[in-house]
Length: 115
Image (cartoon, rainbow, N blue to C red; front, side, top):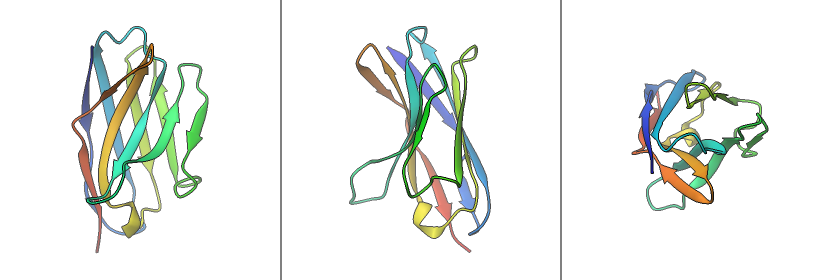
């Protein structure tokens, strides 16, 4: 079982930046992929970005070029740097890990982009 604790989030103005972080603990030695989903109330959860243990990354088209995912394997942490934020980026962001086919989730952190 992997436990995930997220930090970051909050209110930011359009065009601004924000950084989310997620720390994994527990059975974290076998983690392969780490990343972020986001969800708007009433809509399905959407994959935002993912990074493998080897450093390969993948982004949703809507955030490509604006968001950057990074990972510290030694500390089992993953970060999401979000730049040029837009109102449509407003959502609850969930950290996740994939380990031997099992997915673990963080509790979610609210990001609100508004003036």
